[in-house]
View (cartoon, rainbow, N blue to C red):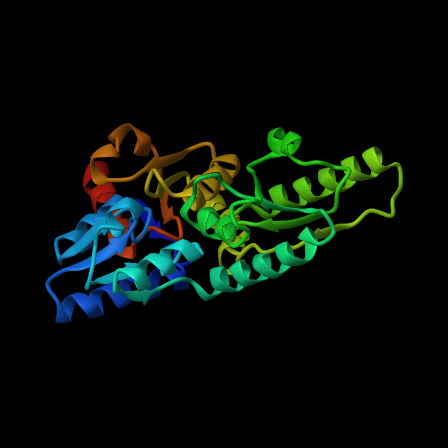
Length: 292
């Protein structure tokens, strides 16, 4: 039996940077606070917790003073920085450069469209850490939509400036874009509408989809490794499942089932941008033991 780990799976640049910054700081200090899970993978969170990383939420941040707090790759709204200044908190900012650029573009886009009585719309998961940071650039006024079912939130008689969470599906974004455009034309009864669509999806993430398609085709069974909280993981798992029905989602070793691998000659192990390489390697070794 052949077991292969996808060479293109695993942490993206933003997550790698955040974890490296956390590890460097923990080598110098016994404790470091992190605002939210450093990555949407419980195994990696537990590993870093063992080294002294303490995960806090925004309410706990308000009670801290004179300490160091790591901001993860997802980015933060302006209020977080204001709290840090007020409480003399030193921030170790690991916000992904792609996310920071998007935050700036949304702020500029919001200021411009507001003068025209328009709306900023964000294609993303409401409540997601990155989306909260993006909405924060608009004083909380951005409209968040997760799919076509949320389009009723938009006033199609007004100008629209559309952006996307960096880890969303490209096909989903363009489907949303086309539907908004068509509805604006219908409502305004003219094709001369004021609609700006910004494809702000991270290409390091989106380029994994076609590579995953090829990887999944090569194997009888696919084990997709991801944390339950990972939006990117859910999206990429769906990509694998559609290509190969014999695809299974696991977050930890205990979820593996030996019957998945009966009569399988080739097994592929892959994961999300929030899945550590070491966990995929442990999963692969466990599959080997189960198969034998």
